Length: 259
Length: 287
Ligand SMILES: Nc1ncnc2c1ncn2[C@@H]1O[C@H](COP(=O)(O)OP(=O)(O)O)[C@@H](O)[C@H]1O
Ligand SMILES: [Mg+2]
Image 1 (spheres, rainbow over the protein chains, first blue to last red):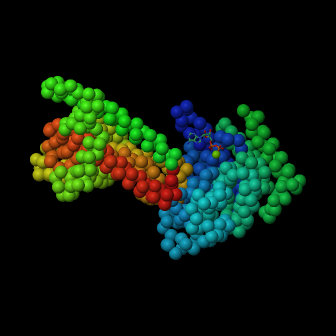
Image 2: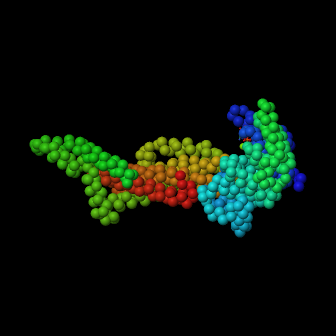
Image 3: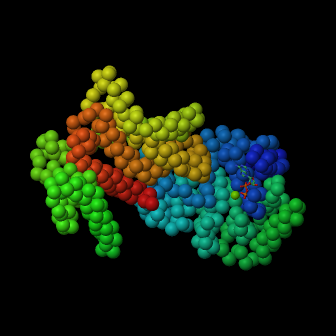
């Protein structure tokens, strides 16, 4: 299970803006292995989103090197290597839940019968069986976000990239979704890149926590979690959990005092 | 009920003002006539006369209502004096012009959104086209089309389209550009082509904007069709009724045609509004 799927070497990314250049990523080196659950945590503006977007070929680095499944990010997109989940569910109001999940399948040219089959499967994965015929407005925020995860899973990418997917939801819903996400991860063996603002969320979910610091965005610490892959919610009260959370907090603080 | 009451109050107030205006504006003629005949008129005599003149400066509401009644319900719709007949002539040009204008507007908007050169070049021309008074350009369009043998409903429809394409272009460009960066990025991650992005995201997203434009556009179409009837000295259509009314000082006829045009406009906008509500409701996009 230590096959690398994403490797970044000396990654730099500078945006040219009207107020001059903004360095969003500086000298980022990171390896993500197959089956890892990697969280990116850090204050706003430290380049978490930018890094995820570089993996997804939505931004292109101005320096360094990155491979996804041994390919460039653009090639990886062509081979349907990843599904991307944004902070907002972004479901089309004019499509049913099933219709929304079919969107990538239609674009990628899956046969009709297979589309139906896949929709059924992913709805089951995110616990939304029976909701296929509903419209987005008929679902709660948490359910909509689950539908958007199903949409990202529908074409069976190995990598799931999630940018603060639960950021707009309340704590209780979030706990529930985190549990479900772990179950989904265990069942599907996907590699997950997950951006968050929340220390408990990062520690609870991840096998690897990447602590980032701002101006310019760079990696302050990479923590390999000692927690087992099987994680009931109560694990958050164990000393191991608290120790990891403490180290994350230290990393964040160190990053801050830098500037 | 509490929505009808204010509307009714305004209507009644307008009618009262209209009557007062009619008395005030027509009184001079009544007095002149009386002086010529050497008569002395009482106040009530003056009022009664101002509200029943043949060619008043401002016809009273009941005169216009009577004219409307006579030229709609009491005339066969094939009669040259039927407002329904003239209304249909104008309506057919309006609908044809609206269809042409909407089609052209949508095509231009698609071009503007997908082609940088068109984005830079089309909009200034579209805006310039609307700053030319339609009354100045309408006769030229009719003369030019006439000289190449195009007559009848089409020249009017083209003038009507000239007015209605503009709101459609503006609204449709805004609508096609309404999807946010996240929505566009999502489709990018699927490797969607420009055509797929258009069909699956931009076009459906533009519907609320399109319908808002269509409401403005159809009213503009009607104005265009009426204006298109003026310079030809047309004998058919609401515009022709306005024109012949003004030739012969038939103010009652002018006002009846004006009210018919206003009612037609309200009905057209209402129909578009109904289609809008039904469509957006089905699309889950009611605003
Ligand atoms: N498209 C862009 N153009 C210019 N600057 C950008 C752009 N995207 C992000 N940035 C800047 O890059 C930095 C990192 O942003 P981002 O990756 O969104 O941070 P985070 O997701 O950690 O909050 C910020 O300073 C942000 O203002
Ligand atoms: Mg971000």
